[in-house]
Length: 257
Image (tube, rainbow, N blue to C red):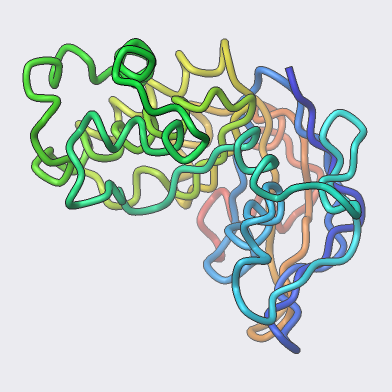
């Protein structure tokens, strides 16, 4: 199981510095939550962890991100391979609208060269079961992925991410577009998945962070236009009850942010 270490990571969009000098270690088989006010660099930082940040024109990082001791930004490292090991689920469900449920789940496998239905179908079933969706869709796998409800679409995207057997899952506000019932289903799923995956989740929901995570990182920025910085990182139970920094306490109790 993989451990991620971020060492002095800073990230830019062109000339704008969005994240400044973040260092933390994300432990295997745990859920790590990133919290903080809007614009403080949480989503930018999580995208540096699997080289998604660099797909934006003009974006770059400094520092290093180590995956079990190997720098994923080192010369010669294939970013596609990195993203296969470190999967990502985005804020809004984004199934491929013209593809069936089956083809949505198997898309990554087919890109990697697996084409035979006999090879794909067992993986599709396993991924949908892992995402808690198999029983709901097993009789309609040829229907469009976009025909599902919002919560089902998000679980479909989770199934698509885990079909290629990553070791780490990054989730960028996976429940922000969902109703409370679907949100609870995703939270239950996260609790189940952490037995198999290292999970990092960005969330604005303090209660959600407290419910699902083992560790919490609090980011903030001094003023509008400043880069986001990591203020405090530790066990969720401590961050939410006995934080070391008064800014963390002020944010968690709703006095700012």
